[in-house]
Length: 103
Image 1 (tube, one colour):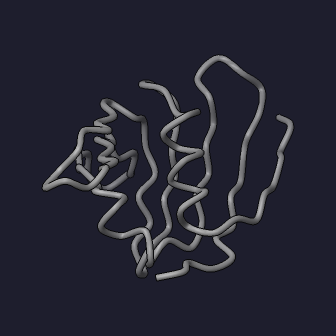
Image 2 (cartoon, helix red, strand yellow; image 1 turned 45 degrees about the horizontal axis):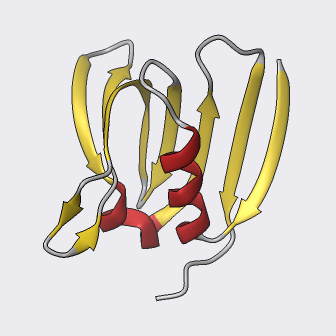
Image 3 (cartoon, one colour; image 1 turned 120 degrees about the horizontal axis):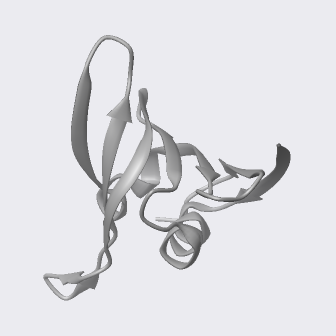
């Protein structure tokens, strides 16, 4: 598997997810001491209260439990540490290290 690593701020990471992540891709999110790995079931880029939004529904792949979570990435973007994106039918892995987040 080819691995590509990028460093970017949280806003660019959010834009990357909006433009590149598709349903059934694997997305691993590390934020605020939380690690959420799993398959993307839905992506919602609707506007909420006049602000653009990005919510992803992830089927969490864990050995001890199976669950589905919705993560509002616009709400946690300042806490993002790392995003790993593995497209469904490609032999590639994209690692995004969050450099900073201007608030």
